[in-house]
Length: 114
Image (cartoon, rainbow, N blue to C red; front, top):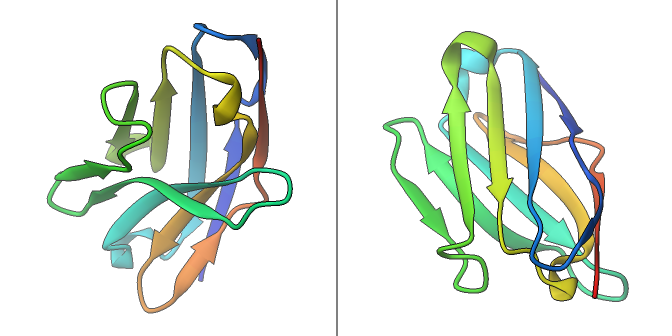
């Protein structure tokens, strides 16, 4: 089992930055993929970024060049640095971890005002 807790969301003006954190506990050594997803009101949850156990990262086209996913193994945490935020980035952001199953955090709200 893996438990994930997100933090760092909030209200920011367009062009601003936020850093989301995902604290993990449980069977962390079994995790092969860490990811961030988001869900805007009235829309389906969408993938944002991921980092695999070897450290390679990939991003959705809509956030590439603006968002950076990183991992701190010592703190059992994954981060999402979000720069140049746009109103369309407004959503609930979820941390995801894949091991023998898929695990989700409770989400953290990000609101970008124009």
